[in-house]
Image (tube, rainbow, N blue to C red; front, side, top):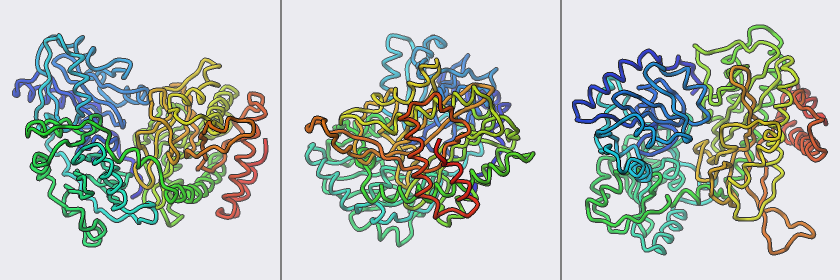
Length: 601
């Protein structure tokens, strides 16, 4: 499936759709409604049917929500989307709200005196609604679970997806589904829990060693599951998604049921039932409570085991990154030859890069729509080029390309920022500080027990010393031929999940000047045990990162006088490794280019 470049939602549609929604709410006795960018699986990536936030507002970002009130409609967006949202919504109708600096509870109280605010209980977690209720306590504003109000006014809402499921080989997974289910069932028994509800698509796919095609770019299946304490599993999904070979792969201990039967099955369970308060829809715990069943709040049992990759998964990721790194070098070589010629556009660059990935004959799909921003478009952190926004790259500027691929043996995500002509000394200094952040994370060693919030400052220190920073986390978790964004691990000042061996993350600091340029550099890294150091305390175990991504950084943008000898040594060693690992995979032209690009500083 090639990346397409449709025109984005038209902000001009927002006024009428907002008026229609308010009219419907009035008929239902509601004064307002919360429109999240979420489906019942609470995943970041949603099918076209569930793009309610985009349909209503025009905003296409991967995170956010809208609170519609009688006299205001706030679109809550985090730091990644502050620039993007202003160009996508009708600002006369929708107010961008910086979130989480401004939380929904106080904002609602400021803009709404009294009345009932509706929400769809299948699109919000129990934790989310509990926090909002707490924030509204003492006011004359109440929350009411109701049918989805956007669905009621969306005349041509797409149908639910019916992507085919397929088996993911046990050899690539490193463990069979039976082994995984037995391990999780033993943990349930140890906790005195009779069953666990699984709602996250990547958890479901990981546990069953299957993959799907229900959302763009991420090979996941939409379905719900109940894992029993004996290792048996009830899977609730459309039977049309499964052929005989996939059903055989699931085995006799996995029973497939129609999705509508999930409610009755849930209420027929023996308790206590484990439910993830932060990811499962509120409707799940409500249905259990209505049946008199005890809810045992606990993390999705798949999330941490899924995050700690097996050696087979890590080895698959290594091979996928070498294949992908060679495709990236072919693209960078092409770009250097093409950029001096007139007329290069962002879309042309995106298509060229995807073409090199397809030339590997191993590409399942790209792992997300490529971010390719020239000049000021690079400052839009999650910019997605369209036919409408497509920009000629021009000269004396920066080009930011954030892209990735899905291969059967691994998922990749890489960002490089390139000089097109001479972008100037200031841009080079900023680039070098961002690169210093990449190096700091790559070289880190730390004692077991530390989390993303502990390491995140390392990526920002060089920028901080120049009075600069970036408004996104330093890194996200990444799945193995699964979602390119995967929890619970993160490199972020808000993450308290301790790092464990096998966790894969992105390492992607950046710097953005609105209206001018954006810089981001990204490698994927995997947590490994750190070897003992002579003179170190033998009882103190440490961890470190192994770099998975191999492609050159742009030497033309590196200001060596800003770097320490150790940083220069890291860059030279990394570039030497890039050349050794990739040169036999490259065309003669790209091999010659790579040798020059990887020359020592």
